[in-house]
Picture 1 (cartoon, rainbow, N blue to C red):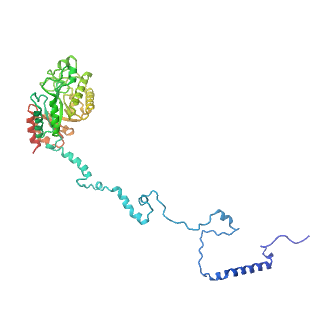
Picture 2: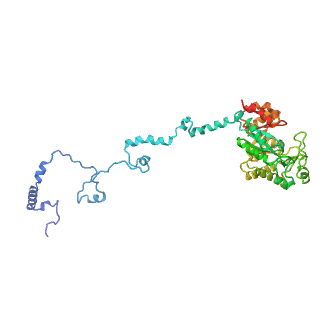
Picture 3: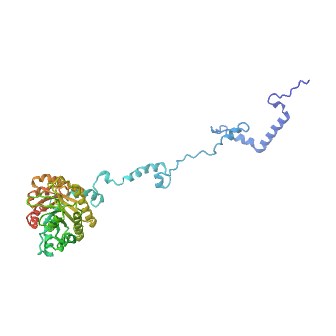
Length: 443
């Protein structure tokens, strides 16, 4: 058997022939010498530092080829650390280009100040007289001053009865009277146009319903037209007064017909001593329609009238026979009548000269705060309760007094909470009353 082993021991370097090793070394020396490599190496600096990136992988073929495949090679250039772009930044939109740190810092205060450009409001400083801001701020003060005493009252009205005008009145006379009232400080004329359930003017509704064209009187339709025209020339208003409302007495031309048709509520209304009134029942459809049509007809016949005014006779006295609460029915009637008038002529104001809301509802079934009226003037005819009535008048649109209460005028005129004063002459000529009023409005 042979004792020789076929296994190789060590690295196998001893098996390389010596001649081959010498041949390789000699060839390498010859190549370097011809390429000038030895002279190049001798010229390199001896202390040259060599920077090797710590994270740069050193590739050794055959030894770490798998690592090289798994990890990407290092970038040839380091990443540029520039500021990120800000597409939604207000600074970028304003300048249309990225700004350096210094300009950005300088722009921030200016950008923050832009929403605060109107400095007047936070500082509460008064602007120049011509500025709109100043006018708005001064508006409430101006309104309050216009309601302070004398000629600054919103309404200074005087009542002229429906029978004050006679057939002797000409157009010139009527216009002259208006100018007189204006010269005495009056800015509102309250002229009677209705009473005792009949109109002073010619009415087709009245003619169709009762066969009468108007109350027996010498009133001519053109008189009211002249009155309105002249008043408007002087900046005055004319209010048409519907006296007695839904009440009649035995002197009414429709009294007998109303009794015959059973249009009257049972019982007699003795609200005022010496006068027995009968109340037309507005719960009856024909009665309600009559008043509605009368009012609509009037605002169409005189479209330039400024207001119509009704008084405390639009109500039922509590002492009528029987315990009947007519409040809701009266409210429904009033709402319908006012609504129809507004539809016919929206420019006309519907006003009341009535008792305070407590007395009106309790004693007259008149819950007028629910009627949708435009203005309410509180009657203060009861001088014993005058102070209490003033409190109500301050809350609403004004106060109504008689010529017997002239001694109350100084306190009324001086009360800046009362916006309007209406004077109803009892037995005094309206022109004389206007002259007496002047001393309270003009210093």
